[in-house]
Image (cartoon, rainbow over all chains, first blue to last red; front, side):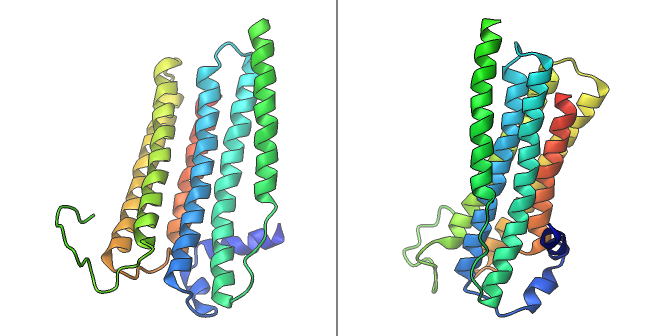
Length: 130
Length: 112
């Protein structure tokens, strides 16, 4: 968490990243950029899912509907913030010639998505019966 | 964005892996995902009663989409300017991510 706060400074400071180490092959930087964009799309998909829950499950009780939608929106926020953080960390690791950072986030996100999916199945079945 | 000219020798040092083109398309795909979110936001307002707050939130979503489009456009211009494009800089990446965060916050306003 402290590391995260320390990295936030780097998000806005292009010179600080560029001062360290030496510039890697441009193709590695572009690959890192595409990974960042893929995470951003994941975040946008989660946000879109939040809208979709709100729009396309109108028979649900208000609490469940809003709760699920807000959970998906919050997951989207987390995902996009983590995307830029991971991008900065990878960029810096490449400049310093270090190993790329490892992360628990993909496993965590897939567990959350699985739980939300099961919850939606249950909620839709229960809501449909009631 | 060079189309139309059938040039058998595109350039002296074209990347055989087409990395800049793939990155350009990745930006396009991401913008398209943002478009879907903006359209869903507009649909939310049009179908569930349009209160002033929700209209403002949906308008903000569309404005954020325009900002994202602008960021993507700038980056694509940089990518296609030279065969060896400069890497993405932190302000661009942060701006793109913050646009996404702001879209989610507008979404929270709309859903509540």
